[in-house]
Amino acid sequence: MSVKQPKKSIREMLKDPKNVAAHQKFKAMSDAHDQKIAEQIINRIDNPKDSELTDYIGLEHIESNNLKISKYGRADDVVSSKFVCGKGDIIFGRRRAYLRKLAISDRSALVSTDAMVIRPKEKFSKEFLILTMQTDKFWDEVISRSAGSLSPRIKWRDLSSIEVLLPPLKVQEKISKLVFSLQDNIEKTENLIQVAEKLKKGLLEELLTKGIGHKKFKKTELGEIPADWFVQKLSDACEINMGQSPPSSSYNSIGKGLPFIQGKADFGKEHPNITIYTNSPAKLAKSGDILFTVRAPVGAMNWCNKETCIGRGVAAFRPRKNTDTLFLYYTLERLNYELNRLSQGSTFTAINGKELKVFKIASVPLEEQEKIGKILNDCDKEDP
Image (cartoon, rainbow, N blue to C red; front, side):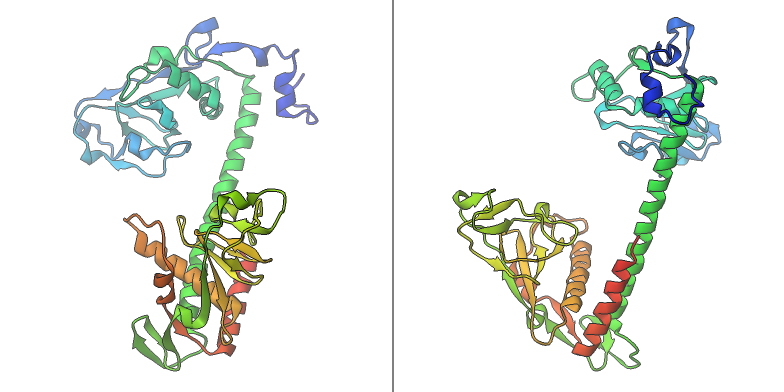
């Protein structure tokens, strides 16, 4: 079997019993079978200021299950003895291994002594090795070999005795290239989503406070708003129906009665995913209502597409005569941003009906509401 055969998948290549090399077991980072895969780099410096390095990697700078270090500390801020790593070295968190802290450094830096600096040998792919080390099976072995109750640690001799399956170098490189390419694409997509979210948030704030084409503004408790707008309570724009859970004895999964939703876990992309029904409904939401979670996580939203019983974790918003439905939806989305801002640094687990009803929003002429709602809805349709 050759790795050049395009019709065989990587999984098939690794399962091929004729591929002896791909099925050899090597002891990771050891001298077993005269195959030394990697080594621990112990380059210790007692006075960090003598290193002339500017960056520091502590365990706090390595995120669980993230192979890239996105934030480095300052070398000037550390005083005790540290290790030194080079660009491309693997940083392995040997303390509390259940946190799964493992990453590749993209620069030379000081490293906490609670981590190991590991460097693969030249004939082995460091990318493939770190992917192997990130598997559940590998971490299970690491955790089982760690010692200590309050802050378990693993020693190099125990880590180096863990056996891993390594295919030939060309296959290692092919797998690594594929996986890291997928990871890069995922990160780029996530970055695009974050940028789009920021732009959407800015547009939302601009349209819901400044409107379209206004020249004159006035100061209010909401900040500056168009001169012909005024401030009103949320309850002036819509009916707010707080949920109430029916008796648990009325629950069923066979479709008897009305659908029942309790919170975010029952929400889908646009409409609820119905799995539970009740034959004793208490509070109801109607088709076209906007569903809004009022218990942690607060602010998740869905459209109600059929008559549904709502539990205590959900409120239903129904626009009044002079309120456009889409405009109300985006007003609630802005409310969600505001609630998240107010909750930063505190424990925010719920909002009640009284608080929702008096929440202040801008009162906007219906024709302008419809224009704003359409603009924001078109923006949503173009999200990546």
